[in-house]
Length: 116
Image 1 (cartoon, helix red, strand yellow):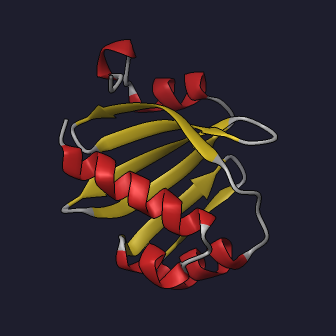
Image 2 (image 1 turned 180 degrees about the horizontal axis):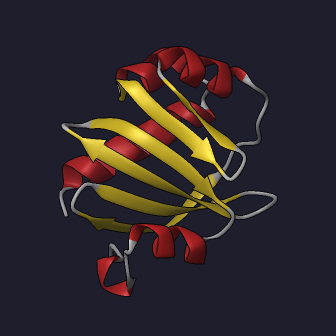
């Protein structure tokens, strides 16, 4: 685990909540992958469109980190989880899962990867 990966994800999520699209793009690789159960998109243009759509502000819950993969529970009116891949202080992919258990299963992270 590195504090760099954690800091990158926290800054990325703060930029998303603040609708600070320029900071969000600066923290993301040019070919960032964005996905959920309904499909995937790639690149800064897709990120800008996605981040510009109306969304509720969320808080982050427990965070799990291992080898550049960060899974974090997202708490809002409905809880979900985000799985990030971070390379050289840039988010290269983010995938929204319906819950923390499915995000951990998909990334093969376990309770031993919980950041305390």
